[in-house]
Length: 124
Image (cartoon, rainbow, N blue to C red; front, top):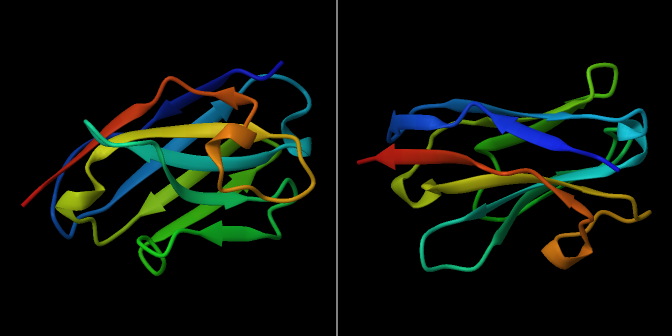
């Protein structure tokens, strides 16, 4: 069982930056691939980025490549999402999720555990 708690969301102007954190409970965090997803009102949950259990592999959605960076610290049971050059279309609730599969997944149905989400609002 893994419990995930996101933090770091907020209101920022377009072009600004935010750093999201996702703290995980449990001693098996380092065995999970971790993903960030987002969901805007009236839209489906959307894949943003994921990182392999060892931090060596990452997969980014095209919409955030070059602007967002995922990282993890297994000693702290935490995964981070650094978001730069934010755009109004990045406005959404951001969720972190954990997946114990071998391959990194972009399909949210593959993920076993989810946090409650943190709101990111980008004003124009």
